[in-house]
Length: 375
Ligand SMILES: Cc1ncc(COP(=O)(O)O)c(C=O)c1O
Image (tube, rainbow, N blue to C red; front, side, top):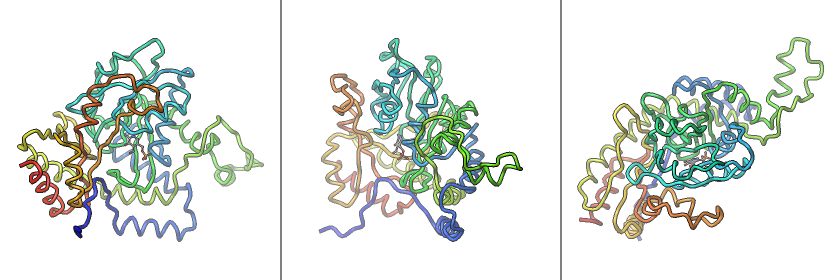
């Protein structure tokens, strides 16, 4: 039995500041949606230079909201890369549309304009892109196709494309702050849009389509609203409110995100150097000149991928594949479509540990175990 601690593939870091903020929040007896959400929204928007921003309760829900915000005709086709998390397809279906899966580039693992082009029909109404691992998608050729673009920047907090923050380049963009993301609040998400009207609407939608709370109406109205408990329901929507607890964790994370990113970058660069010369192992690409990577996941391509994963697990190193291509899932009825790059990645890609809690010893263990397996 190997008693070494398991090295996790993903992870976040929270410290005393997050704990203090949460304790203060709980002692205030206001744990749900409140002022600290506004505070987080303002600071997050400023920190990442976003045009607009609203916090919601998860990246998955932000995706559903993003698709809804485009107001597409029912049963529109939205082209989605197959190499992504299930929420991308679920959001499209739940909003009443049809996800049409496309391939990605083998090298960047990102969708390209020509991957999208081959799936365009007269029902195509929008395109979804995913900045896989935190590497920016080449957005210009995709924008040039002329369709509304939803940007899934769940991995790409802190990533940029040609100097612009990922998430803010298309029409609507989303972020995830789940437990293993670069910036975590436990579970949470965010949404941005170029058009501020969309984000005003998102803030109404996230509270069951009502927007303002009765309490706000009561304390903010100067005599005008006699019955502050009455609703003016704007549209049918589900509840996606973030909590003050989550916002308080986020506020502390914003203070440390630069340090967390530095540690991710350091690990990334050591992998790039140490794994570069293993025969058959393909390291992931760095960001293009002028772009910034978020280093969310480090995904290698290797011969004998399954054997390596099992060998590493036997040595208490947890790895995984992000993602099992969506078109291979019978639920979506597209298993007859061949997306050869996604299918190649399904056989040879592996995410190995990268996160800010990894010690130098953990990093050495991962590198030496991979070298031992191949050399
Ligand atoms: C690419 C991508 N999109 C969306 C999401 C959904 O985010 P959340 O976990 O906050 O719902 C994830 C989560 O891992 C993701 O990886």
